[in-house]
Image (cartoon, rainbow, N blue to C red):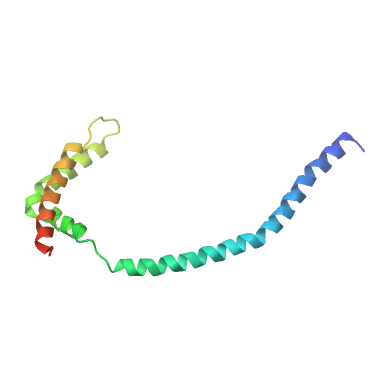
Amino acid sequence: MTMEDKNAMLEEEPEEEEQEEAEEDAPSEEAEEEEEEDDDDDEDDDEEEEEDLVDPLETARESCKLSNECSKYVSKFDSCTDRVNSRSNTEEDCVEEMFDMLHCVDHCATASLFRKTK
């Protein structure tokens, strides 16, 4: 037997071991998949219950963004983000515009939320 034959035999042995290991692991993978499916069913039940709940703050913020009161801040923020995204190399960011918009939106939203509290 030549060295090449010995090397070829050594290379083949790990492949056989890997196949045997894969066959041994296969049943446990199926069991894991079944467990994941069971978990997914539980999560789906939880999500269905949670879908009915709507955060009033988010609803108020969306309506405030569309209001006349905050529309100028929203448009300034949108134009800034468009300007920044159109440039490939810029140090400008829209932090000031974002904070102005969020301040207005939050001020408007909290005012409407406190009217709804008991």
